[in-house]
Length: 470
Figure (cartoon, helix red, strand yellow):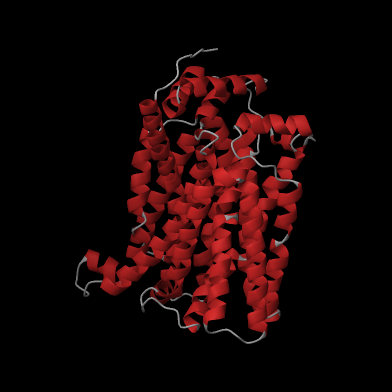
């Protein structure tokens, strides 16, 4: 085992912190692309429907086909990232995003457009799993919550910028001229909206080439020298040695682990957390509220202008309150933020249902509680789900386990997307929101009974905790 003894001076520590932020921001670009690609579709649906003469089934397939790619991407990314490394799989996701954006922009038929939407879905699925995993493994324990929360911040920023870019292109498209660029930016505006994603995808790809591999993956593969070099650059030699020593104590061997370990008594609690927390974050109705929220806000008379409207308002609140998690998660801890955020979300959903039941669907009150729900989600469920899922699983199978947890999130996402219109029609808005509150509330029990406080703990310490307490 490599020994390192010297400590770093404050200047070197400051340089290490800057390096940490820079690398984590690069990885967080995966979240930005996830958010951008998911949200940009909202501005293209009516345009694509018109240009290709879509019926209701084809329109639904255009919107939802990326979800199939997401599920496939998540299912493959865990095993691939454990075997070949986090960095190479992130590079694959960047290539998928780039190919999808350019392919959608240049597609000559609806079938080709769907093909490239599926490719984009693969990129979303891979990035939604590997980006927060990489950040979690790369970050020192005292910064890990903040760094992983950057992923959620990037995701929400991507959503907002997609709304802004759609609005900008729609309002600044040039007059129709007989040129290819004019066709993209005016007569077939959706091509520009979808193609714009190639810019951040290209930046993501170039930056990923320059970042190192996850040090914990390097340790798992027995590449001690390479891991030591990265850890020293991040946090100094003394901290690097502690990380390596802790890893060595826990590591029985460097063989690839099996998901069967999660079903043993030692990790069963971690498995329940990993499956339930992401699922509950989706069945809280966040996507339904984001989807129907703009219409509610516009009915309430709250529009920034004709181009932006309620969608950007909700998106901005989502971004702003994510900063609450970034600045407090490593000070207050994961559990306090979850209790406060989930409790606030349940209360807001109940009040929204009451307002619908009373017919108060315009004015200030509906606005307040829609935005309150978004704010509560943004500083709790949104970022903390990714933080906790990236922390709780053992080193040897973290990639596969995080993929399983992320798949649970996408299943919840799918169910809400499919059932919300049915519930709104069959149950009405009041009971729909009350049902979301009911589905969201078990997260309070989960936080109280199962989720340990992981603030300030190394990943190896958390792994040891499961072995000590099972």
